Every structure is written in C-alpha cells, then in structure tokens.
Length: 224
Ligand code: 5RP
Image (cartoon, rainbow, N blue to C red):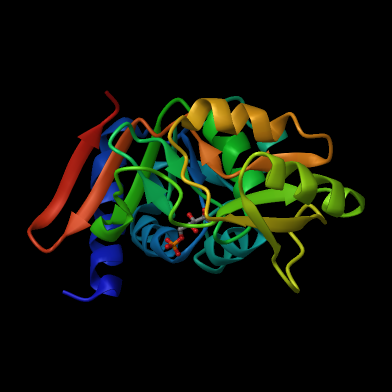
C-alpha cells in the first residue's frame, strides 16, 4: 500500500469511528493536512448525519465548503462533539507534534473544545520519543529573534519557515535537533516565552484515540 492509500484508510476509519457518536445537531471539528483531507472527502458522503463543522484552517474550510458541508465559526457553536485531525508524530501516550501545515494554533483551540480528539495517521508517524520532526512554533512576527534566542537556550535549533504566514498573520519557527522527553513540561516552557502564540506539542491535551493505518489494517490506540 502507498502512503496515500494509508491516509485514505485512516480517513475512512475516522468516519466509521465517529458516525455512531453523531446526531443531526452535532458539530464535527476538522483539522488540517493531507490525511485530514481524506477524512473530509469521506465525511462528504454522510452529510445528513451531522449539522456542520468547525475548521482549523482556511484551507480545510474551503475544502469542506466545496463539498457543500456547512462550516461555522467556533464562537457560534455550543459544543464540538469530536475533533478529527492528523499529526506529524505521535508517541504511545498519544502526545503529538503537529503544525507541519502551520495550522497548530487553531488546531489546539478546537482540540481543547472538543469532547473527543481522534487523531488519524499512517504508521510512519508513531515514534518512541517526539522530536525527530522539527517542532513548529507560531510566533508574533516582531518577537521572532527574541523567541529564537530563547529556543536556543532550551537546547533547540530554530529555523524560520520562509514565506509562510499563518491564518492568524504570524510566522513559524521550526525547532530542529530537539528530542522531547517530557512533552508536557516542554510544551509549557515554550508557551511561556513572550511572543509565542503556541507550539506544536499536544501533550496537555493529547489525542484520546489514534487510528493508525498500516499494511495490516487500521489499529485503534487509546490514551493510556
Ligand atoms: C497541520 C498539521 C497536520 O495535521 C500534520 O502536519 C499532518 O499532516 P499530513 O496529514 O499532511 O501528514 O498539524 O498543521
């Protein structure tokens, strides 16, 4: 199976997983990225089963609307039944690195609101220790150099993601050579740097379920 086929399998598995939890009033949180795009395409086949969605990026909102799926602002919904999103890495505690697509802040907000966070990925994303994937940090533009210096003090090697402006008008620093042995502590330490909007460690609010697509099928891993 190709990686694209694994992503499609994960997207379909997410639909199967969430359908029994939905009713016609439900709002579905939708993440960002190529795996989530497979989920969006699967979701479009079951439009009558939920009321609409909230989206973690303008790109996902556009894809949902192309399918004729309603997209609401987060402030205009009472609750989010379930949030489905991909990840750049997950450990077996379902702590994640996210933000490869620069949508980490809105992703973290919807994950915080959602009753359940379902992460979808192919098996290449499961790691022992987070941090091989460079950690994305969203930063207020004028604080870029200050934040970069603080990230170096924490032991990382920050690199400005050229040409990328987030949906919130900010920039991204990707932190290389930064193994993350204590995800919650590092998440908090980076978020405490003045000028950081948020960082791509999802440990304070990890996923509840990881649907991991491999050659043998889709495995369901639950938070320990
Ligand atoms: C976007 C994300 C994505 O979920 C993450 O980058 C995974 O993307 P893909 O499914 O394309 O591998 O966090 O900000």
